[in-house]
Length: 487
Image (cartoon, rainbow, N blue to C red; front, top):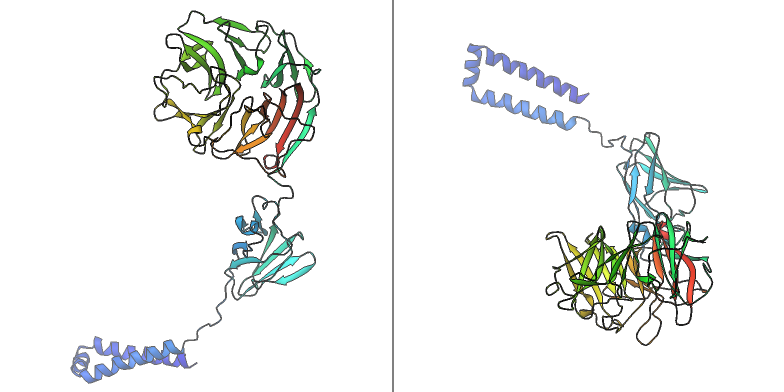
């Protein structure tokens, strides 16, 4: 009660002081007495300071704050997956949730971890409730997070207000970097010496087979069950089916000897356009790239090779491509047996890669050409990656696709008739290639090395169809799936 009496004294002194100021006569006398005024002011200050000093302070302030602000785990160099992830905290009216939006990476251990949390409940408490244990958090507790469910109870510093969280954290039980391969079909047609080419058009797989005398077409909805389609019409007898290119369900083919361009909208009926009187000679199809169909032509006046595009059945030479002199291709640009694919670069630009093949004089080459669309100038640029990495060996009959964050090369054969490693990866857009760990990506034991196989991507899966070796042709089908694309 001491502070109450001091407060009363201050009020009394303040009233006295106010009376003197409001009374002209007394205030004049009072104002003249400097010592008295100083005494009153000094007394008021002393009493006020005593009042403040005597006012009781709550040294044990409490709060109802009980939210978790951070959840993670203590760093463990032998278990890095714990701290690589970001954990999300949801505060709800009933039971909150602490979780990782994606499961922790494969191989992350959760059986012996030290959770780290921050919350504004000090000196409150946090308690972990496991199926077989209850642990009051100290910041250094080793817990088994393989036991589910796990709950966290945070009690505010008022020791009354509580908030519950359910912790839902898991690690991938399947290696996301693992490729799972299976053979879908052992044989689509009887073994014979022939060439093959497969594509996915009109919502089905289509396989072209040519034995040098005729072309046969097979169809499949799932890659497993195949049936022979109607006999194709309009194609040359000795059609080099491996050179057929598909674009938006339309098929394109060039016969270099007849100097004709062939098109089919239904993969059965083909129509030809003659270019024997044009200023250029059609040489071969190249690829589908950047919403256009590309081919290789030869200028009749200079005998130089050029790139060209096809629109509505008409071939148009591309006279300007950065990196080329007058738009002419160098002698080491392939015209056959090359691998070509379209992919998206790290800068999210459409690019194309043309690997290996045979030059105009028939020699196998080791080039890797990178074709890029330049948005700012609405032009194309061609660059030879072989200049930077000349050790890349000669290669013909390979197949390349972009899948799972890599460029992947399948099969092919070098100049010494040695089979290329069945699978190669490139992480730098085709400049360098390496063999993947066979523990994560290895083709089935029944798969045999080959060239000119078709590699397709459908429903996030890879399909390997057909191909040839030195002494036989293949009509088998393999499907491979990267686990991370199936989650």
